[in-house]
Image (tube, rainbow, N blue to C red):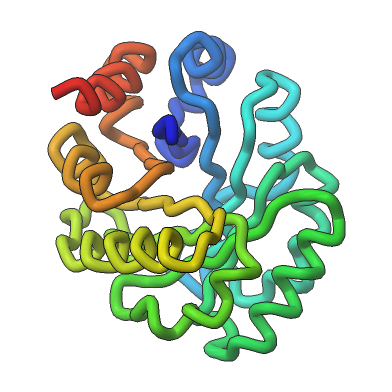
Length: 221
């Protein structure tokens, strides 16, 4: 399938929001990745729903909201109302398959997509029984909530596992990766079977249109 770039708006320059959103819309990126951190499940605090509403007004791009929060069941309806097109939450919030499945189905019942996220130390085996119920699996290639980390190569094994399981069982979930994505790690993850790539500083620290293009051009190398 066509690869999807999902720039992380955590790295957006909010002193130049209008211009940067315009560049994102003009780029070949199809999604926006919206990180929500509560200072509890992860140590940092990020955005609320007002920022999401503003982003949706400024573009018609697909938004996947990554809830790094302790109580996604309580707060996900607010992000649905704010315009999220997909919500992902962490398996580690519950560490329970049935609780995760219940929330996945609740989110999907609102008419949007839903996915599950695993941290670097969580194996694919922990979520295998959920894979028929998810629209996407997000593999974290850094520890969520901490900046400046290097890409963790063990995430590639998880992607290969998910890609093989998907093919063998005729499933349709997307495989997404988040953390330390640049031209080199994009190529590694793509070759492993990843389909959706969250990229932050790599895209926003250069011309946005060219940054997105330089990732997708790895497919031609």
